[in-house]
Image 1 (cartoon, rainbow, N blue to C red):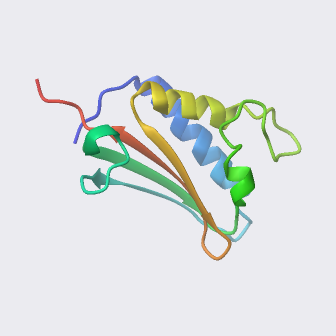
Image 2 (image 1 turned 60 degrees about the vertical axis):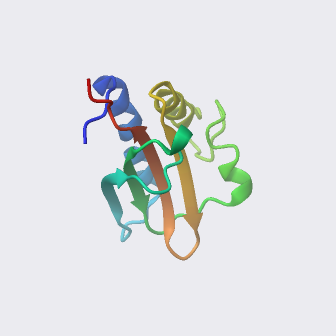
Image 3 (image 1 turned 135 degrees about the horizontal axis):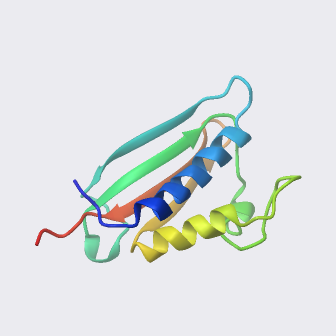
Length: 122
């Protein structure tokens, strides 16, 4: 279903996460992108239906103590980075009334999941 939003800003948000996924994946790792409709357990207010985009990679793990800081401006775990990509991405998603989640597990890797509200029919 359609969503409403600024395609340029949302494109930047998706690109930030995709770049991070590739940078955090080993040579033999894998990056996947999955999209779908989330009606049942939507993290949006009032259980509003949401479109989700999950960007996942294998071979990377983010410990819980680091996950809490990921969206803080200037926080980075990279040698060469300023720590603004995920902070900006979080801001863009929030400005579109969406939610950005991160899930990480040492055996399977890391997923960033963006939930955006389904556009209201007019």
